Image 1 (cartoon, rainbow, N blue to C red):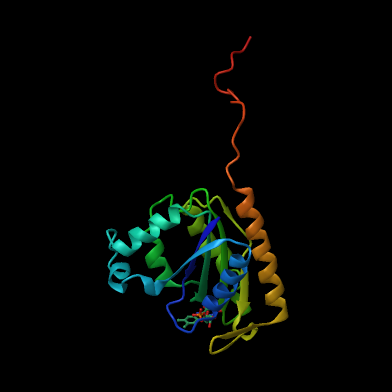
Image 2: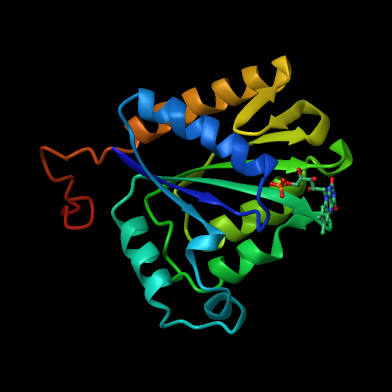
Length: 192
Ligand SMILES: Cc1cc2nc3c(=O)[nH]c(=O)nc-3n(C[C@H](O)[C@H](O)[C@H](O)COP(=O)(O)O)c2cc1C
């Protein structure tokens, strides 16, 4: 099982990326291969100038095609997900998330914007034909303390993150293509 993780904050250090890093570790402990990307893996010029032939974006798209799921993190910027993340998403093919399970993570300065993933990011993931977008995790800045390499989550966020990761893990396993042993022939069955 393989997933792509994508950090959608343009900033370093980043609270949303810290959530992603903790999630990656958890998934790796369940023997899931994680291919990790940040926006810094793409030339800014390719993203800003909409270079659909960008080699980095093409490689990302190819890796995404081989993955079972996407773990995506973003800060809330101006009541939405980050514009830098949108510049990458705009370069992906229309069906980039077909057959994939997606777990979104977000951080924001105010819980007033905790629904930004639902009203802003989820419709975009649906436009890329994601098979299943799970209930994500939102944390406000006071719930994530960054000290160098160390990240401390409030108890509430730690519990919600673990529950979301368990749901992601189960959904990834559910999505394994089931092979129909006998064809249903629904379209060719003759009526009497
Ligand atoms: C340009 C900018 C716009 C922001 N807009 C919002 C906002 O509309 N709502 C909110 O709750 N937080 C907002 N914030 C706060 C960030 O969402 C918050 O600090 C987040 O944790 C940053 O994530 P990061 O460290 O991964 O970049 C904004 C921050 C910046 C820099």
